[in-house]
Length: 154
Image 1 (cartoon, helix red, strand yellow):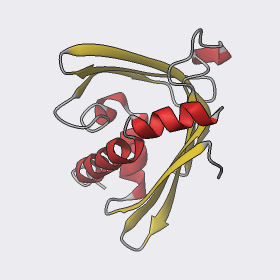
Image 2 (tube, helix red, strand yellow):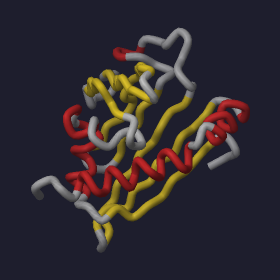
Image 3 (cartoon, one colour):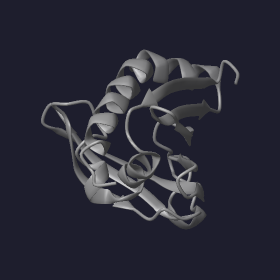
């Protein structure tokens, strides 16, 4: 990890399989993916290398599309996506914020060890992402993810 990276680490009291499903099934991503009262209006997820990762978020009445691509998918273990590339490896022009996310999941006696790493191409982008509230926002979302994942059948 460098000054170009932002990291969130949590133990989620939810089964790893449920957490994985929440990240890879559109109907399960929408309820928790943005801090409430904001919401996800649409999610398109094709969890395979080169598959699309799209969300349309509504924040204070404004819509924000976020388009990207999955780069690596290791079921129930690792998910890597970026807004620098679109589906089928097409470069985004311009990219969104300009980062790649690496999510790792592991079994833990209390549920799931959850790590989210946001990697940036330069210090200015990393700083901007931190100032936008990466830790607070992704922390809130992790709490929402945990609560929602606990409602899913094992």
